[in-house]
Length: 339
Image: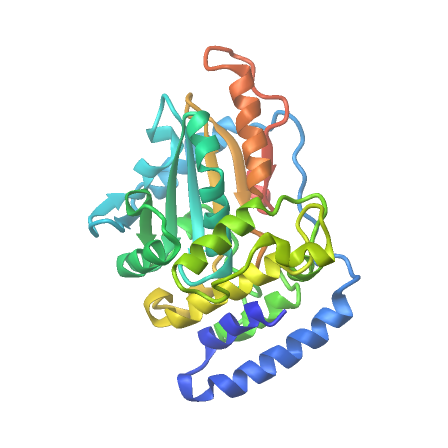
């Protein structure tokens, strides 16, 4: 449970005071987690209904990004952000994943899951573009650490894309508080529904979830020298045999934490306020229509990849030459402007 708290300390205080801040953060987090473990989240996720009017959203997405530049991580060249989303990329299904900052747990876990389904995306003929918050150099560090192709990766130093698309700015946006204090509030579930449950899932497991992506990520991290470097799935046989077992995901988060802390200065955004800016995902079909949108709920609550894949498969089932839309278009967002 202390893993996300370390990011709060990093975002809010100078190096000399970090140990003290870490102790405060860990203490507060353990107290809040104990109190809230059985409580409902602060805000329920808005569930989709069939046949949302998504065409208008699809037409709005590119213009909102029209005047925003992002930078190719491969060579630092500027690129108009609007050219990296579906309406500009007709004839292919296209995923544009907007990460939180390059040193954030959400960004690491989301990309690790996307890497695990890369073959499935290729089989569907889907392209993937990833835009993360931070500098191009931070993006290169991220790509090298996590083994992600730089040609798919772009950097948004100010989080302008995320703001333009209405993704959550994090907790308590109207209050003038340090980013670290807001991040601590999010750890308690304030404007971050599902965070406590997501943390506990790492320790308690989930019999309905697959551990495959976790072990692919752990293996990659071990090859890069991140602790733990020698571990096999059989190590968790004593705590279960079905689904995602207790401590499996927590172990990956420990390994990710090691990579983040070792490279924090290279990964962190220049503006501490961007430590709590949330991301999301847009998926467009071959007709340039939005078939899936997700806005991150908060810490450790990011795009559910299996849900996204289901929406894409439904779109494929309709076929590129059919007029009918999929009957269960997924629009997961707490932003009422998109509902």
